[in-house]
Image (cartoon, helix red, strand yellow):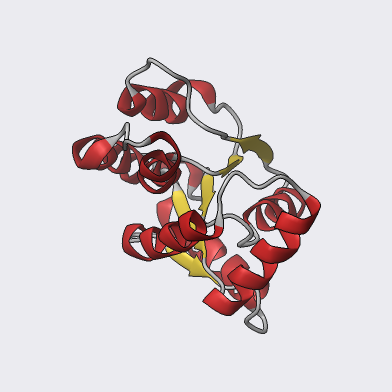
Amino acid sequence: MHIIVEGPDCSGKTTLAQQLCKILSFEYRHEGPPPDNVDLKDYYCGVLTLELISPTIIDRFALGERVYGPILRGKDGLGEEGLEKVQQVIMNLNVFQITCLPPNNILWKEFIQSSLKENELLDPVQYEESITAWGKHCKNTYLYDYTSPLALEQLLGVLSYWHRRHRAPEQIQ
C-alpha cells in the first residue's frame, strides 16, 4: 500500500506525511518539481510501478504539476490526458490519495508566517491561484483538514478500512 499526500504549500502535507510514516512504519519519499525534459506521465507512472518497493508515503505528486506547473513554469507538463493515465495507475495499484486542505484563512496565516522565515517560491497572487487550483484538482482524494478535531484519528480509521478492503486475495486470511 502506498499513500500520496498532496495540497497547497503550507497545508500540512509534510507534517502529515511524516506522522503517517511514523505511525504506519512506511517509507517516506518527497517529490519536488519534476525533472526537465521527460514525459511526466511516464515519470509519475514509473515512480509508482518501478521505484516503490516497500509501503511508501509520497509527499507531493502528479496533482502538484497540474497546479504549480502553470503558475511557476508557465505550463502544465502533465495535462488532462497525462493525469488520467497517472490516476488509472493509482487506481489499479490501490494507492490512497490525500489532499491537505485546511480553511483558506489558515492557509494564508501559515503562508505569511512561512514567507517571513523562508524565501517562498510563490508570491501572494500565485499563492491565491494555487489555492483555487487545488480546490479544482482534488477529485478522488480524501480531504484532510488538520484543524478539525480528531482529523488524524478519522484518517487512520479510513486508512485501516481502505487497507482491509484493497488487500490482494492472497493477503486475506
